[in-house]
Length: 558
Ligand SMILES: *[C@@H]1O[C@H](CO)[C@@H](O)[C@H](O)[C@H]1NC(C)=O
Ligand SMILES: *[C@@H]1O[C@H](CO)[C@@H](O)[C@H](O)[C@H]1NC(C)=O
Ligand SMILES: *[C@@H]1O[C@H](CO)[C@@H](O)[C@H](O)[C@H]1NC(C)=O
Ligand SMILES: *[C@@H]1O[C@H](CO)[C@@H](O)[C@H](O)[C@H]1NC(C)=O
Ligand SMILES: *[C@@H]1O[C@H](CO)[C@@H](O)[C@H](O)[C@H]1NC(C)=O
Ligand SMILES: *[C@@H]1O[C@H](CO)[C@@H](O)[C@H](O)[C@H]1NC(C)=O
Image (cartoon, rainbow, N blue to C red; front, side):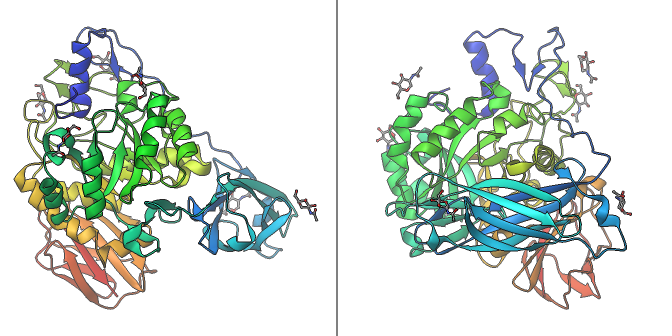
C-alpha cells in the first residue's frame, strides 16, 4: 500500500489478501465472504436502560480544552440536565407545587480554593461560570476541579469533578484548543497576533507522494482554491515530510498530522511528535484510520492518545471510525475529536458484487457500513455518533464530530461513480446541519469537477459571515431530512440567524419553512450560498421557485 494512493477500507481488504490473512477476517465484526460462517458482530453500543425516576445529570467541563498562561480568564460549563439515563437520583420535590421551583447552589473549587459560585436552574445546560486564572500557577499537570451542588428545596448534595489544564506559555508554533461549548477549534500561531481565532477546517485528506510532495505549487494551488486545512496522508515514519510542512507553515495551511501507519508503535510516536509539535501550521494529531474496520486492538488508540498528550498537550487528537456501531466506546476513548467516513454514493447497499454476497446488519461489506446509499447516510452517521456520545455520558458528550465525505473516483470498486457536485454539497451541508465541526473529504486531488465545486463552498464556510455561525454557535435541527422532507438547521449568532437548507430527496415546489418562536427575525440579510431567492413571510421562510432535488442553501436573517 505504501507509495500508492491509500484507498481506505477497500485497499485494506486487498492488502489483507496480499498478506495472506485468513478469509474469515471480518470488517466491522462481520464476515464478508460468501460461504464464510455468520459471526455475530460484537461491540455494539445499545441505548442505556432508562431509569423509572428522574436523575440529575450534573456535569462540569472547562469551556476550553486547555488554557495557556497568558490567558487571564477562563470559564466552566455547568450542565444540570434532568435525565433518565445518567446521573444521581433527583428529588421528587421538583414536582411539589407547594414549593418554589428548585435551584442548585453551586461551588466550583480546586481543593479548598473556591473558583466560582452561583445558582443553576435544574433542567438547564450550558451554564457558564467565569473564573480568574491568574490565581493559579500554569503547569503541565491538570488541576482536579470539583463542582458541588446543593438543592435549595431538598438540601440534597451532588458532586462531580473535571480536570482543568492551565499550561505554561508556548512560544513556538501553534496552540490549538477545543471550545467545548460549540465543539469548534480555536488556534493561535504567528499569523494570529497572539490571539486565539476560531477555525472551521474545510479541506481534504491529501495524497502526499503522488501530489502534495511533488511541488510546493500543488500546495499553493490547494490553498488558492479556498481549502484551509489538510490531512496529509503521510508521516515521518513513511517519508521525510520536512519540505511539505515548511510549505504548509509558509501558507498557513492548517494540517492534521497523520500517524495511521505507525500509531500502534509507541516508540515511533515518541520519535515523531517532537518533529512536528512546534510547527505553526499544526492543527491536530491523527492516530487511527478506521481502527474498527481493521479491528485494531481496542486499546491502541487510547495508548497512542495518552502518549501524545504526555508529549504535547497543545493540540487535540482525532481519529476516524468507519463502522456504524462497532466498539465505538473503546475506540472513541482514544481521541478528542471523532470523525466519520460514510461513503454512500454509487454503492449497492444491499448486495456486494465484489464479494457476491448480500449485505445486512450482521453480514457482508458493501463499502458503507449499514448505509442506504443516499446522501442522508452522512447525516445518519453523525447522528449515530452523537447518540452514542449521549449514551456514554460524561466527558464523551461534548467531543466534536467531524465529517469525512466521499470525494474520490474508484469506479471499479464498491463505488460505481463519483458524487455529483450537488451531492457533494448536500453531504457537506447535511454534515453541518447535523453538527459536524469540520470537514476533510477523502481524497485530494479529486476530479476537476469536484475540486472546483468544493472550492466554491470552501470559500463560503471558512470565511465570515458563515464561519462565525459555524464556530460560534451550535445548530438547532428544525427539520430532519431523514423524515423524507427538507433538512433544515439554524444557528444564532451576533443578533442574526443562519438558516441552512438541503433538499436531499425530490424537488420541492412550495417551500415554506416555519421558523420557531425563538427566532425573531424581520428581514433577509443575504443568501451566501446556493443561489436560491428567499423571502420572509411573517415567521415563514419561502423559497422563490421552490428547491430542486439536492439543492443546498444558506440564508442569513435578522
Ligand atoms: C414530575 O412531573 C412530570 C411532568 O408532569 C412527570 O413526567 C414526572 O414523572 C414527575 N416526576 C415525579 C418524580 O413525580
Ligand atoms: C488549603 O489547601 C492547601 C493545600 O492543600 C493547604 O496548604 C491549606 O492549608 C489549606 N487551607 C485551608 C484554609 O484549609
Ligand atoms: C518528496 O518526498 C521525498 C521523500 O521524502 C523527498 O526525497 C523529495 O525530495 C520530496 N520532493 C519534494 C519536491 O519535496
Ligand atoms: C517502531 O518505531 C521505531 C522508531 O521509529 C522503529 O525503530 C521500529 O522499527 C518500529 N517497530 C516496528 C515493529 O515497526
Ligand atoms: C444491488 O444488486 C442487486 C443484485 O445484483 C440488484 O438486484 C439491485 O438492483 C442492486 N441495487 C442497486 C441499488 O443497484
Ligand atoms: C444477514 O445475512 C446472513 C447471510 O446471508 C444471514 O445468515 C443473516 O441471518 C442475515 N442477518 C440479518 C439480520 O438479516
